Length: 121
Image (cartoon, rainbow, N blue to C red):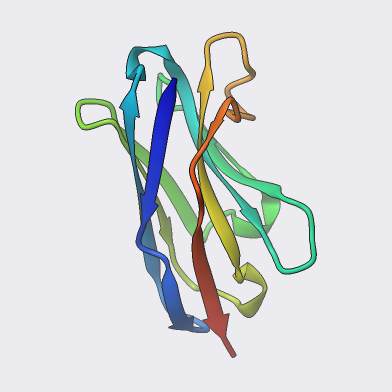
């Protein structure tokens, strides 16, 4: 099993920035891809960004050019730099990791507990 713990959420004004981080522990050798999903209020969870073990990235159109995903395999950390934040980015953000065999652009075998991001207008 893999455990994922997020940090870095909070309240920010529109146009501001936040950086989310997630530390993986447990059977980290099983991790192939990593990512971030989010769940806005009263909506379904949606994929935000994923990164493969070779560093290839994938972003949902709504965050392209504003968010950047990165990973440090030596420290088992995946991060999400969020710039030019908008009120519609308000959501609970979940760190995810995918095992080999799960499409890297989905990366949703394991989930963290989530961290709240609130963007005020």
